[in-house]
Length: 246
Ligand code: GLY
Image 1 (cartoon, helix red, strand yellow):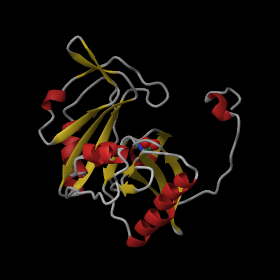
Image 2: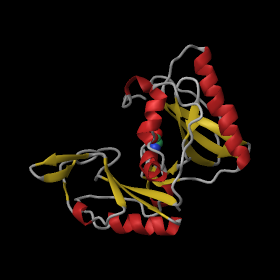
Image 3: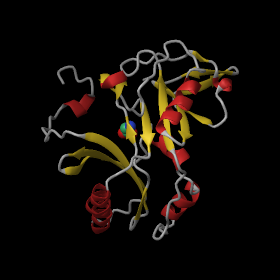
Image 4: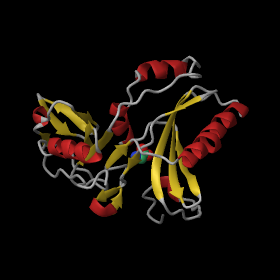
């Protein structure tokens, strides 16, 4: 705060109740009147294995999570429904994605944060799980026609592993050449985030560089597939967690 490293966001302190439990990310499409909840995911925020190191935007994610029916009911009725009713009441014509960061506490799910965007890297783990054409759902959102829409889900578990740049999160190094992308086996998706093309090469251009993503029948298989593919990719200073999904 003294050095103002976060600018004005460091000028005020808010003390909040400390919540213990496990976090999860709930995303829902909203058309202003109705919502369609997407499968629940979980990201791993710390830089290193066993949740050590500095906080990051997310070093990997897992989807879908199995939720207890009671928790699902609370998310539907007490969080998402109330959010949509609230914006309607306040004449806020919000149409798009709402992201709710939750903590599953001993007293049930509690909201940590709301964002009007997809989660990163939760979305990378979510996309292969969603079978329904996302474009149709987004169009229905834009047209206010979400009511009655349902979501078809692919079976299995999806794991995404973020490959980050040297120095991330404090001071990510850019400009390293990425090799091995062509050796990633079929059936594994590599989402580009902090990359840039340069003279026929792909270079690192941000902190979280790539997200290597695999869907498989079990968590063990999904992890194996994602990590085998991550092992094919190299760039100087590349870092990734080995315990995503565990
Ligand atoms: N992965 C955390 C976020 O998108 O806010």
